[in-house]
Image: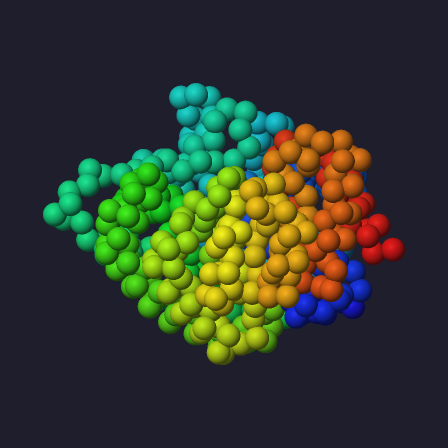
Length: 419
């Protein structure tokens, strides 16, 4: 099988001739640029080459054609035009991380020193407005800076939380046409499209670090409280957001057609380490109706499989995810309560594709030995890949301080699992 055939078989719960692998196709299945840099050094010895940072918020490195081929990665990502800070992947310039990693960052990524010795990031690189991101000294990625105006209940308008949603612009359409051409040039790979505007209530998006002067409810705690205390306000935001998203989705379906195998719909987290973060009744009332609309549109018009990312213990929500029309669950956080690999595969393996769960990024990968990593990867592949329905990836992104020997053990275990 080529990579595309491997992904297609996997998504239809057929046994592929090897486990399908994704690293770098989405902003939740990537590898930090410092680790990508070290991988390139180990594989090709090109220590002078600078890896591109394709997602500045988490500082994820580009998995280019050469690296994907060397590591046996099967999936490419069709990513949004702009990052969470509003930067575009162009006009690259050199940058050096706190750990000494040389890399390339987007030209719009303009930083200023932070009082703590770290860096401040600005929406679209505009340093004339307040910063929207902060990387502390010695850090590896950015956190959003909440910019919340005082809330006047009498003047709250759902339109203020809809500023970032709208029809695809002329620039967006030109970008996606170029992306379709790029995808056609990589037709042997499997592909996942990150659909814009369908992540209802994703807390990484609520502060809107790409907007220069965000309005509405932008404080993280205030937003979570609002799902209870201002339920009608949040519903109106989701309702209009969904209307716009469906219009844009139709455009993207017409453009990409059968060239796409999967579509990432949402990165909204519904679980904590110990249980659901959003109670099942709240999910059914406030989120599920909109997930159903998006999934229905995709399934009516395409063969794409739809992807939900939610960290934590979501075992009690999985039946609702399935009813809402999702085909793929990510990141499969097996370390969380009720999320044991064998249990998930047994109970939901016929209905869901598990995309992730290949190794624990909280403990095993960053703090275990190479032998620990190798053993866990082999075990997870044996469990999840039986009968298909498993795309290998770590549990969320591989972080910047991960020992390179452990990352090498991960890829060695993937390779050995095919023999």
